[in-house]
Length: 295
Image (cartoon, rainbow, N blue to C red; front, side, top):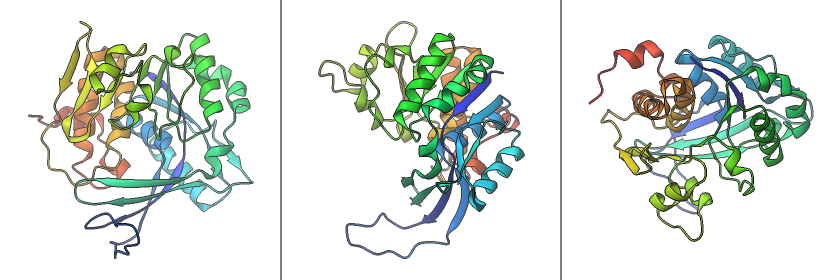
């Protein structure tokens, strides 16, 4: 298994269910309010850890109850929390989640995530040097992401970036990334010379792009430099929250098996994750993933 450093967000998720998403000005009665540990960095770290990888997370929390809840939860999944910093000026970040039976919408408040600075990354160079894979998302400041990519690239690390929520990375930074994992909306930030279709963007990218496509599966460029589409597995869908994060964590976990095998295993893990409620609760363990019969 790979030794993974996740540099990213730590959020508390405030979640409810609705029959349909509200129109402008519409008020809905939702289901019970549920409070979960979340954030893309947090979720992806736990996804990889549940599948057996050795995982450390570098992020920031507020000096509050939500922050302590996140710490205790990470400990439960055996994620190394030593590098997490506590910010006294900002509260722990939150994510407001609404989901229907088939989809979800998420609004993130940045909170302490915004305090994770480029200097924090400079101070963590020895930590980056120790790990095989550096996994980033975009719920932390852009300059912090850039510093992490620059240092990891210099140290010849595998750099995986999930560009969500989409923030424009400088053109000279993108070639330093080993793998980009956008969804069908985020991939538009990587258009090249007017390329519009998903296939064009993937073919012309200087960095391998694996596009997650919800119920349509995965789109990527294979070893023969051709676009390959893998359909999603057919499973009973209960809750799609966290499926993308499961894919990212699983992809990093299984990269030692090879690029295309990692994609296959990550697609299986994300499919299995939607069969249960809750982002982290739905994430499979290695035993569950191995035992499940995919069709």
